[in-house]
Image 1 (cartoon, helix red, strand yellow):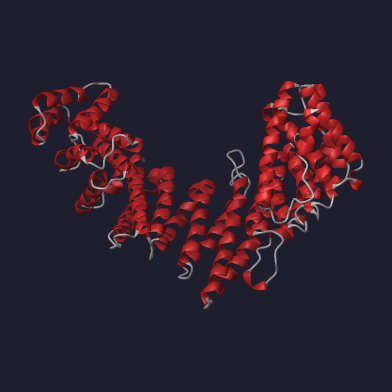
Image 2 (cartoon, rainbow, N blue to C red):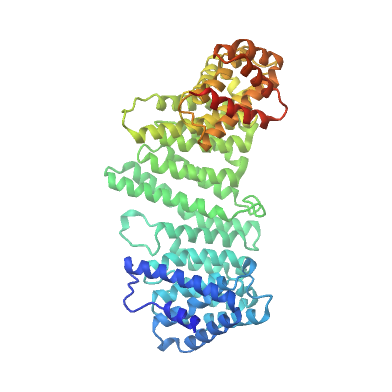
Length: 589
């Protein structure tokens, strides 16, 4: 009785406004979630009874769906959908194991896909149909003969070409999930599906006033699906290359035309519309590459050349003086993807792309450019050493120039942008030193090396930003590890004692260094690592300096100095980290 009551309460009422959902609708959606939890609990009490009740309601409703009100049809399919969570199994294996349950679900799924209910003229029923089909995708491994029927529903006026934008949008996402889940079972239908989605892949330029069926966000899913179909197919590498070229060539051709139009455009609104359209083209090409994996690489599928052509087509957008932010952002994202997909084949394009991205850039541009350089440095290490050597100081000059720009005192957003840029700059230095590329810094000439080192000391001490401080101490301990020994660069040992050791005390002694804050504790932990590394590289000389010169200059009591040096010499780094926290808690007024 409770079950039937819950099922009844799940039903939409006549007043529910599907086209324009407001507060009442939101409350009902929330109420449905509560009812679902109740149904899940009932399932724990008696799973067999729930299954039998749902099956009865489902079969009765779907036998006469043509003459049944939409809310009853929707709830019948909804209940089938809800069974997946009410009677959970691992990895969606609903159609194996418990025979009674598997048979019941299989029968209901067969009824769902053969009854023709996908043609019901109400958006709620249509959406519920597609959601359920995708949720029980394992059904199609057991009864693959139903795949064409469901594919057609996705592709025609019931799905991607439905009159409701809401249905089209959701179906685009669900279709991509459906195709991915079927994987090899899609093989017989690949070319047919690619032909049928051809018109949905069109880049709709801003000037034709034509209202595309799908938004650009929805088109991303269709492009990803097309990529998945090609990459996972059993075709030869040659065939895959042809199909991928057919998919991407129209984008490249449109891109060239639109970029020329943008260069000539006078009106700012038109410039924005064209730049957005160019950005969509890059985004679509980028999205197709999500189909590749370690097992199916771009090279194995014979598609490297196609993506290199895309790169060559998209990179000229970086030198376009109009709508720089939009265009750079799109091309940068594409480069991130290509570094993963094309590996070293992407390297010849990086120097000129970087040069363009460093021209007339603002804090935000730099902040977004640095992760690209970090990705290249971490992935290719010494392979990109010459490029990094060449680009190191121009990048730093661009960063320093932006950081030194005067800002109004109360301009919060400018202050935040600078803080984020400072973090990105230190993250870059951390990547360079951590990837075994410290010679890139060492080869910049004594004056530049000194300038860089001082910025790190400044970052560790002067700015009350524990995230940046932590990174600075990581850089300092790495440099001490690499250069702090007897054969390190001339003058570095002096720098350690004059600047790095004091930084390890001056930073935690600041009032802004809050030892109750979790991020600050992490910064202190890296500060401890730096001191331990100095001791490791300089040995007794370091202890002597602390005992006789540095700590007495801070007016630290002799017995505390003794205690500090003993803790530093402990082989277990954890002991020193814990001690350091206590030391600074006592030292602060």
